[in-house]
Image (cartoon, one colour):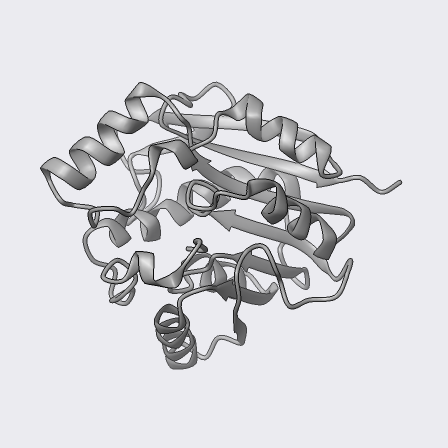
Length: 237
């Protein structure tokens, strides 16, 4: 995750491999995320991809296994060490760099796609983050993201039940004021040079679609009250 200060996630950023506690959900979310995003890409092979706020490398490894040329960034040095170690063990070629989401160490217009999962709900300056992502994308490049809606339900389920009651998520990981609604995020994306913004939510299913995935699917008709997903295209003009 990319956040304001690395010290604010101490205790919540370790032990990505094997996935434990709340990291199990982050890891298993890959299957449903990419099942939806593949409708925009079809074939990841050869695409130059950047995962902003990569954590332990869950999305990076998915993309690398699908033959993309992958880079990942994160503010947490410990997370990057663990991500690199695991990638090496799996013989995956992934470049990892430490930085904030607001200042990415890449030239203008070099990425075919950028993923930004479980990040925007942690950064206070979302305009700077989105503008920086737009900068490194090629014209016509795509951004895929997910984040948390700012609603009563997100406060109840993620902060109150997830952090305070069950302590399944480390206390203090989330700040409700940093959550953002789909209309607000759409406005920021369009102001930063993105177009064709599409928003989707979660639809619960009776059984898992793939082994190890969550019993849910991402759908344009899904529920966005807590978490939502999106795709956007960098304008080519």
